[in-house]
Image (cartoon, rainbow, N blue to C red; front, side):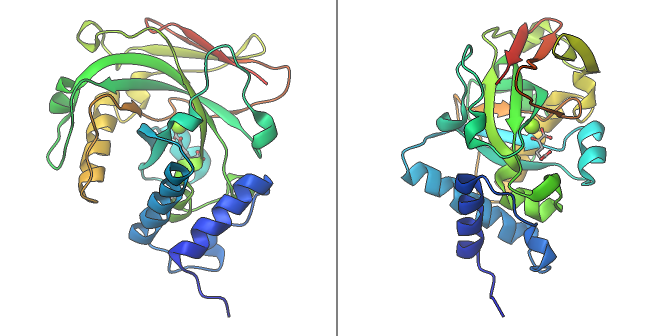
Length: 259
Ligand code: OOG
Ligand code: MG
């Protein structure tokens, strides 16, 4: 019988990613994979990227909206890591030749003007650390077949991270009601979904507080200058060749990704 370890899970995820081959979720044959262990896998996975020369640039939240939780069948939010290697420059296509089954979702993105450390962070204290707010499109790509996973599986897989683009509008959050900031999601010119920031935990500030408090449980904090993707406002849509995906925000601009 094979024995599961953090090291082995990290290896399996790295192999799935580089070979572009989705695997079955760990919990199918590692039912004992708990959240603490899954976050250790995630942490070692990102440490391997850092050892390969990438730099941590922030944190992503996942499954913060009902739309996302319902689709993935997982009813709790989670956090993952963002590196500079995942950032897509505006104007460049998504590198789909490196991805398995990419999907795209619109997100509200914070940039931190100072360090934010839990526990006890509230939406108000979280917003006090925010320098600017921007629009984002996240390209997710699960290393699990058909995006089928439990919370522990998706935590281990760094929350299905692949790449992301952040818009160049850097708004002062004091001037916006982010619960009412809307996004219209379009595929090949047709509207496929809409949501406002309230879809994300009632207000994206709650997601930011949640990230800080969740990191604090592992002795970590959100650092000055980091970006925080607060989670898909709508369900994610598959990225298909020749069918650009656009997120049009009320005040934060319009972003497009394509392959
Ligand atoms: C998990 C990643 C979720 C979000 O914004 O909800 C996520 C997944 O849906 O595969 O990035
Ligand atoms: Mg996301």
